Image (cartoon, rainbow, N blue to C red):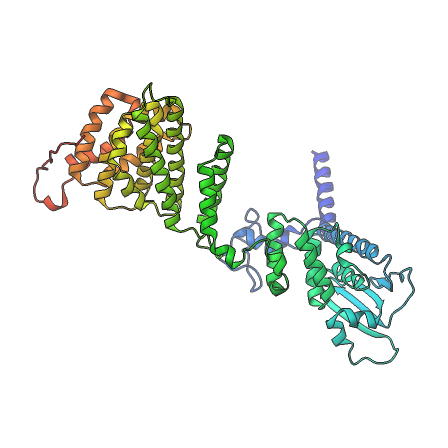
Amino acid sequence: MAAENNLSTLRSREVSTMIKQGFIPDQALCYSPSRSSPARPHHFSPSSSPPNSSPGSAYRSLTRPTLFEMMSQEQHRQDSSAQLRSKVSRILSNAPFSNSIANGGCWGPNNRSGEVRLTVVARDGFRVSMDVHRRVLSEKSRYFAERLRFEKGSHLVEVEISECDDVEVYVETVVLMYGEDLRRKLTGEDVSKVLGLLKVSSALMFDEGISACLEYLEAVPWSNEEEEKVISHLHQLHLLDSATELLQRVSAKPSTSARSDDIFMRLLTGVLQAKDEKARREMKTIISRLLREDSSSQHSDNGCVDVSRDTLYHICHQCLSSLILCLSEATGVDEKSGRDRGVLMGEIAREADNLNWVIDILIDRKVGDEFVKLWADQKELAILHSKIPTMYRHGISQITAQLCIAIGRGSILVPREIRLALLLTWLEGLYEDFGWMRRASRSMDRKLVEEGLGQTILTLPMSNQQAIMLSWFDRYLNKGDDCPNIQRAFEIWWRRAFVKQNASEISDPHLQITVCEYPN
């Protein structure tokens, strides 16, 4: 027991010593909920946290930095200062003028003193003095020319630039004023470094430096992050008029911008007619992703790709005409025609895939409403579709599924007559092809199709819902998984029909079920 008391006393003395030396905070001066006592309530002074602040914020506001923390901060400051001193020394090692670093440094190896002592001071007090030449400063910098305009004679003129964000860049800019072929001197530098030099050159009105930086930036490749920095700097420094060649990398001339519709038409047509299937799939994915990114930013200041609705529907009609032609040929082909039936069926699948892709673009750009009516009116195409083997035609039914998903999500808004016409024309084909769609299409999300179809049906009047649901009920019992499972929509229709009362017949305790036939 005595040994434990001695050990406890020893530890208490060690803790007390560490508190006195500042290596740990004095807990008596810090608010801690676990140490608070009703007998000694904590009082907030005007400078402390308000009563409604959290205990954590009160603790942080009253905790003083320990000696160890202060020593760590001081060490970090010294390390940063040493790194800066090393960088500046390297820049000044061959400077054509004498110099001194941070007050205590020695003058550089070149003792050719100038008539102007230029001192650059950082925010933390780090100083660099350079004895530079009045003639060089005045010729190269309009800023210094103005500062030195009234200084005459051979006496030493002192000029100080205070509160500098980056002393290293200021010093390097002054050294560049003595050089020739500045663009070559910038070779190998990174973009961030040159942007710093551009900023200081602009501040000092060092025109040759500005030109050299802009020429460098125009010639080197940029990452996405660097591109944003470059454009941001040009805006901040008001150098857009001086950087027209550089800006041509990121913005088109008005004449080119006006032709974006034609360019877009060429790109989409090229993908649709591509001969290499792998390249076609890759470019479809890339263009879709870029257009999707563009659609998400059309409400921002970046604007969006200016592609007209007419252009998109022109492409759409081309795809639809090609699909009708392929189906017509396929239904009329026989052994004597000499046309390979397998090749023809492959063309049908390809044209259906093309049309699905264009429709996806229409929906993303919120202009798919017109196509719903166009597709609902394709009764002749639906008849041709029914005469083609399911394994080749199921891609056509994916078009119907895609439109139902968009309608069910509210991405396409069309009148109920068009919604009903869409289902009357294509729902039977979708039922027939669903099994093949489910097995053959890796991109098809069955749950998504079923949810979209169910929601589309539920947007119709109750009489139409009833006819479609009863027809689906019989088909699902016979086909199972080869028929879309719209049980959720069926349950909603059931509750509407048998549980909820019609608002217009609220006084009638008995719901009257409308009987109508579902047209084939």
